[in-house]
Image 1 (cartoon, helix red, strand yellow):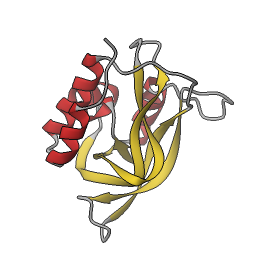
Image 2 (tube, helix red, strand yellow):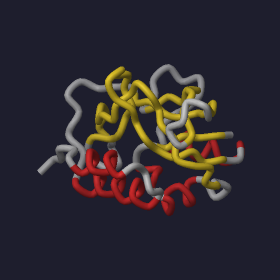
Image 3 (cartoon, one colour):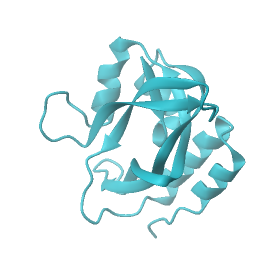
Image 4 (tube, helix red, strand yellow):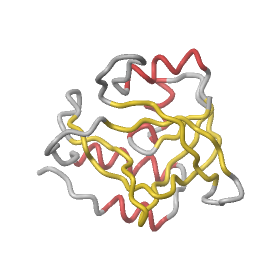
Length: 154
């Protein structure tokens, strides 16, 4: 299964721990979405990443190929139980564009947060984990610079 990561799962060591079968496919762009922090993570104690619809922005991330056997582990890490009425995140199919090229669409699965009212800002460590992953995978420099400007909890 193709999975698009745009938050902490950009961190290759975290991703390999969660999904040992994961292999890197490429950089990709989710069009008409922006990165936001719409949910409080109980484990992290801070706001966590979400991609929310916004025609003026795009979210960069990476696509991994993940064996179906590992998707249950990833669902658990993301707080998603198929069929449950309320989840932390839901897994949905979307199209992303490999290398940002509209001629290279991929149908992927990714997670979107069940948004909460007034979630906290992300922590410095969480933001840095996303920046480090984006840098590791050589996401566009302009996008990494935007990540560095994300407001954090003090």
